[in-house]
Image (cartoon, helix red, strand yellow):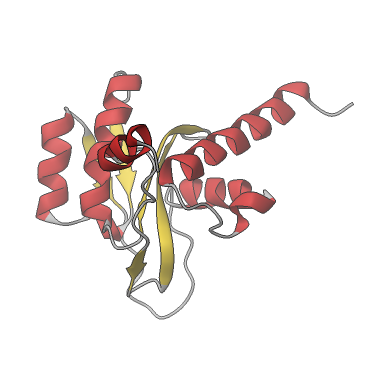
Length: 162
């Protein structure tokens, strides 16, 4: 190995991202954190190892969303984002109006308003073969493929039906 490659490896250029495991969701690999608009179009995405919890992975996502889209005023999240640590992260990243949508206490399926926008977007993205399961070893490459998949979806909508 050359000295140049050793230096690059030391700086982390060739290092693989850590593969995490989420005990609650039984996920090995990485988790996707998305911010979408009200019709489900992707605004920002960050991919983390699966052992990063929602509250920890949300702060870099919110910083990126605030930098790219300063006009966004309201956030809607599911119950995974309802901790005090998450509220502090939201307060540090800007003036957002936040709303947590909790699931129904009854043991039956209930469609939660507004939470299905992101789930629907993840479903659209997962139709691409490369994103159907976790093939990528680098989180930034997985995020790039998510962006490419969303570009493909938006181009299809712009083109319309022939």
